[in-house]
Length: 463
Image (cartoon, rainbow, N blue to C red; front, side, top):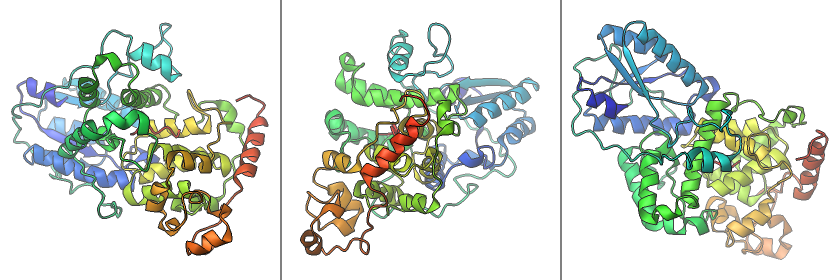
């Protein structure tokens, strides 16, 4: 949108409206709100302080600004969140009635979710045909990244009530722990991408599921906030690996999952709140506030789950493999509704994205499109031993278990008394006993599923 607006030759009035109310329950949470403040401040600096921020109803404020300053054209990048789609349509109608030209662009996704469909015109519901046929076999690869404008000619207008920087945004009491190297903004995004290309991409396919290793990109918040376009990431990777590996490269496939999640949200606006597979409306979820709270705070007594939940609390991030394990434990071992988990991740993730978050939780629960079957229950002890084999991830985030040997760090309740004593660990005092028996709780969940009378992520796709 900015590229096209500058190319028009008209002076630019750069405007961001922070609308607290339109998203309802899906307004930015603590962690993503923290990121947004800093991201807008960096953007304002790059525009020489000429980014004007307003707070309120975008549907009313944007037409008001257009009227006050005789705006002749509006340029914006489309979003896929249901309320934003509706708001964009209302703004377009209001401006077109005043003879203001409205130009909307697909700036956030490699493949426009509005135009991809199966040959019969219906939307895709399974990832592989969506990605391989709907996206890659349409004959048009993702466009090259656009160059930054040489100069931006700013309008001298200043909307009433507008502020520069991030002063008009609500303040959040959350911040990542000291030493965490998040750098919101375009410069931080470029640095993160170059670091991944240099040291992570070559190991990504083999090590992407290892939370104890630094082999993932952590580009997800930069992608979500538009500090890095998926086109930049895609073409930077293709330049490194060559086009021959295009269809099978693991990182590019993960970008494809990000696209699929946005596509599902655009095509299924009920995705954040309603089961896509209606049989799950009858599932006997247990609403146990005490267990939900323990899961949220990393006090379940299952080390890999607790490590992930504590990483989330302190850094605003959780490794993707651990997200799947923690989600499976909440939904299946504890039998709590996936919406509880989706809401907590939304509140605590710096990369909280409505499409990714909603599709991923429904993937794990088995209730979504192309979902994992419900009977796929992640065993957190087995998963921990496989993907955190030396316990480095658990020890980093659950330091009370640091003294346990590798053999017992993922299941301290199975450790002999002498091992616990040597580690200075008393279960129930220093670290909780497991809330549920893993085998018994798995059987209970499967029995409940079978009771629906039908045979049977989260994949956050935010590496």
